[in-house]
Length: 358
Length: 278
Image (tube, rainbow over all chains, first blue to last red; front, side, top):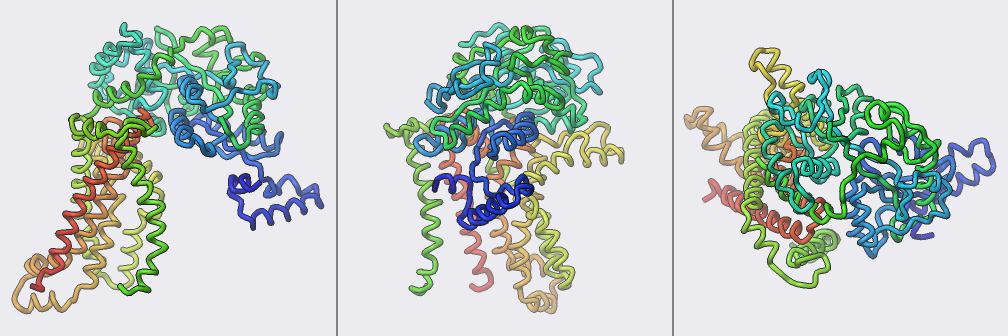
């Protein structure tokens, strides 16, 4: 009890107030929905900045409050940062109960014992997922795909291949992100593959990057800064994430998504119960809610256009226009070999920084 | 200091030891190990820093960035402080409010506002294009010029306030005496006002300098990923590359470099305080 009180930041005074409120709520049931101070259970859930934190806040959090009666504190952090924080907290209380990972972080987290196995039996919606999404370490809730983002006001004929970024007519107009983001690392890995490199040899990618630099107008240090580059029309063309483009489009930013001829590249995004979580049951309920068909249908609607993993959800909207007509098409999207890429991440970041530093 | 006086400082000292000295010690110990399990002692992280030009060029860039931002702050800040000190009481409070205004908003918000100002479609470029000063938008965002401009604005209060304090405490009779003795406005300023305000200038420079070189948010949002300064470098090593011992080592090196610069400036401040008394 003590730990729970400390956890939700409640002082004795607010607890007393809360108790009074609950008594009041019992006495007058009609008032109770608005009186939630008495609620002491709070789940701390990590989420990504941008599309996911917004979708969670608008769709998941209200539904969770209504169904489970507990509130959620969002911890908006990138996947790599989440791993760092969990590693730092090892042996102590973890900073959040639910981890939100892209495919590469799952491998690291399992290796370092940062997440616990997902209790499938306690998660009724789990079996509705596509077979590929039913991971024992935690269900895949969506897939993220990268392609070419471009400003349709400046670029009239949509780009058709990654090679377009090297076109001299885009001098100073190409954007990139630093390799600490999944977008950055996935782009460099795909570039390496196209240019004939292997997972052990990234020379082809970095040679191509050097040739691209004259065209590069800006390299965002983080994804938040990268979004503003589109809004400010600082860049016209860049590797970008399908969902981020949908979110920006909904804000009337002129940006469109094009799939390069070599095909889209993607990775799964999944939710996990953190090892030693303070609220493991709430964590499972929270994750399970993300799997429900009704919730995934809502997340699929604009401006989020989150790719579903529940087999009962029919694809619609922006996804069917550019990415996939059916779940079978989604299954064909190329993925990357993170088990091989992960150990090189540090070296790749370092090499990338040396190449781009002015 | 009396015994009771030093006892009053005990709570603050305890706070410093618990939340500043202790973490710093952990950082130092970590930087002297090869990995986070801290089994083997090594100076490899420091050797790695100084044998690689990529690393120390970042350190030099960062220290120079601080010099540039501090100079811009001083050039624009001194006249503001001078005006403030001479204004009537009512104007002084208005000017003071304007000087402090930047501190009242979050640094993140202010920095994003600057993105809107400096961008290709930004206010500055629109004005320059409208006036026909340039044919094509000037690149300001993601350049060092942009970073220096924003840092100068963001840190301006740290420069103005110490100078203002010194200027307002200055005895107006000194300037009058100088004039009576035949010195012109400029000579009075150069020989009397400026030297007497040196302690304020140096205090302002120390504050602006240390705030500018550690301004992670402003540096990374306005400078982008290609302009790597020490705070971003430390962040990338700690979080991106997960190399904590190396991140700890470069933090320690950075801190020592900053302390060295501040120590030199403080030495100048002490020397300047004795001006005119000897």
